[in-house]
Structure formats: structure tokens, C-alpha cells
Image 1 (cartoon, protein in one colour):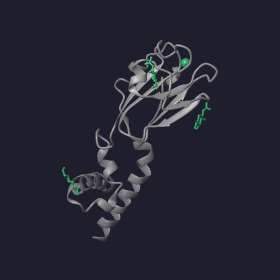
Image 2 (tube, helix red, strand yellow):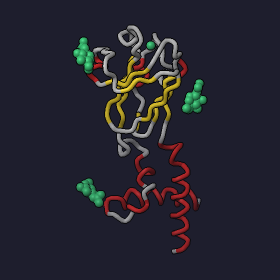
Image 3 (tube, helix red, strand yellow):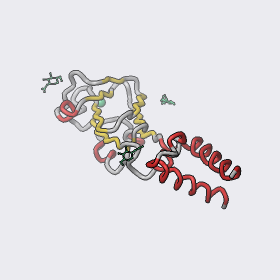
Image 4 (cartoon, protein in one colour):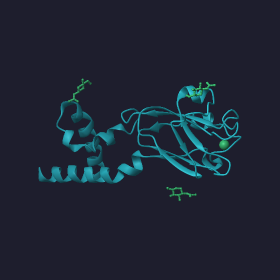
Amino acid sequence: MAKSIALVASSFFILLLAFPTVFATDFTVGDSSGWALKFDYTAWAKGKTFKVGDTLTFKYNPSFHQVNEVNKCNYDGCNLSNPTKNYKGGNTTITLFEEGCYYFLCPIDDHCSEGMKLEVIVAAYSSGSPSTPYSTTTPSRAPTKNGTVGVSSGVSQFHGTLVG
Ligand SMILES: *[C@@H]1O[C@H](CO)[C@@H](O)[C@H](O)[C@H]1NC(C)=O
Ligand SMILES: *[C@@H]1O[C@H](CO)[C@@H](O)[C@H](O)[C@H]1NC(C)=O
Ligand SMILES: *[C@@H]1O[C@H](CO)[C@@H](O)[C@H](O)[C@H]1NC(C)=O
Ligand SMILES: [Cu+2]
């Protein structure tokens, strides 16, 4: 009994240590191209899975570009007025705090209509494969009926790994 408690406790400890690297991904928008003209950000975003807690980092020359977060209507029309937020400075990291769609564009000249715009669809924690480890980071909820299956299967996987 004491042994299994120790194993469960150490499993949680390992999961807690793993949490930041496993669950929060930072995406550099455009990868090595950064945030610039002549890049297809729709293609860049396609096939990537963005989750709540992930971050987007925009790297750009602050003399030529900025980042606006906008609503869908202004995104579709490349409307530069009343952005939700405006970022400058060349190194902008944005945390994707909630599920849903985020829209970004460059408000300088006609960069937006030339394609400097990005739509990102953010999935909830529970969708996608890493959901089981996430649920085990809330041990106080382990005894509830719904939590038991996910937590116990997660722990037993780690238990097996630890024991060999
Ligand atoms: C651009 O957006 C602003 C504020 O959201 C709105 O008042 C304006 O009518 C829009 N312009 C166009 C051309 O849609
Ligand atoms: C951008 O900002 C991040 C975190 O704020 C920092 O770690 C990084 O060194 C910065 N990069 C540049 C090129 O300024
Ligand atoms: C258990 O799951 C059901 C549906 O999946 C949900 O309605 C209910 O609120 C959940 N209960 C708890 C304690 O999470
Ligand atoms: Cu620009």
C-alpha cells in the first residue's frame, strides 16, 4: 500500500515536471521567415494544432511591420481600424488563452491584402492526444467518477514505466 502511494506520488511529480514542456508549445510564426511579406501564413498554420496555453511568437523588422489582433470581419476585409490589440517592437509573443479563432494581420501599408495575415484555430485542452496527462495534474479531482478512468490509466502507464 505504502509502496503504491509512493509510486502514485512520484508519478504525479514526474507529470508536474513534464507539464510546461509537454503542454505549452511556442510557435514562431512563419518559422525562419518570421512575420514578413511574401509568405503564406494560411499554409503555415494548416496542419498545426494550436492548444489553449500555447504561444505565438511574431518576429519581424519593427521598421516595416506590426501585428494587429483583429476580429473576423476586419480580418476578412483587411480593415485596419479598431484592432483588438496592436503590437510593435519586432518580437511579439501572444498567449492563446482561449479556445476559438484568433486573427492577426499587419497594419502597415497594404501588407494585409498582400497576404500578411494569419488565422489560428485554438483547440481546448481536452481535444487531441495529450489530454490524459493533463487531467492527472489535478489530483484533487481524482476520486470523482469521471476522473477515475483517465487518471488511473495515466498513472498505470507511468507505473509500468517506472517498475520496468
Ligand atoms: C472597418 O472597421 C470599422 C470598425 O470596426 C468600421 O466602423 C468600418 O465601417 C470598417 N470599414 C469597412 C470599409 O468595412
Ligand atoms: C524575444 O523575446 C523573448 C522573450 O520575451 C526572448 O527570450 C528573446 O530573446 C527575444 N528575441 C529577440 C530576437 O529579441
Ligand atoms: C461527468 O460527465 C458527465 C457527462 O460526460 C457530465 O454531465 C458530468 O457533469 C460529469 N461529472 C463530473 C463530476 O465531472
Ligand atoms: Cu507588414
